Image 1 (cartoon, helix red, strand yellow):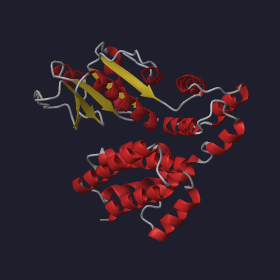
Image 2: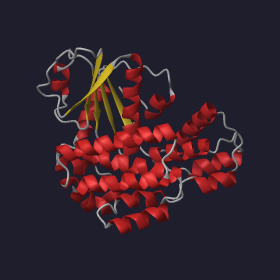
Image 3: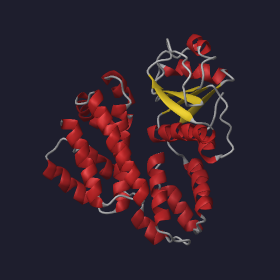
Image 4: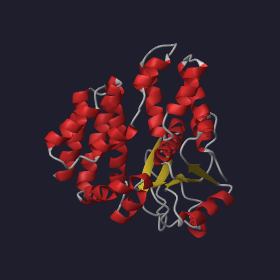
Length: 312
């Protein structure tokens, strides 16, 4: 069966009652958001443990001592076919598979479309209709009033990638104003999203060069927030990949010019350094949530900490 990504994000009454979920498409930030949302919804109802798996072949069905529910998360479709899906039907918990579009997973998608115990969720860049739905929900939740001019300005101006779209909307909330004016929004929202993203690609340069690039692009707490989520995305590409081939497949196509750099970064990581990177992300995100934004200095320390782990 097929489920719409936006329906999952916007409908609080969406029923998560399937055994298998395949989240695919070509918009990686929306894929991650949908995956996180499904996991969060299960956790709201059960004491849930998330277990990352490489393959569904030879998976042992062992009951946990404390958790009431298990989610098996596969950041690829290794071992997924009709036979193996049927063999794990009686396995405790549910299975979420995450993988960008490719020729290889077209056949796998057909399995999920045909099965009543499965959802196929395709994630693509936001179009105008998607932006309308997301913006309407956002305005309602935050009790914000905007003029028609501001509304359509936002629809045209906001990024088509979910992470950036959501980040800029959160900046508007930070204004703490019920009647938002177009002049303030124009200064606030991302005008050149790639400029902050590119700071990550200076990671292997000298510290002086990194600091200079950082100071040119990051001047506010909202800029730091943007940079954190860019870095988080690139770091999780490393953490969630079991080998270089798998990692290369996950690199978004629009980053083809940075592909060699990203591969060189991945080659510097082993299991120990991945754990260090994950700990850094967790620590930083806790500060981010607690303080509703990182200071510019803390953001720079975060970036240099990633470099230190990478080259250690």
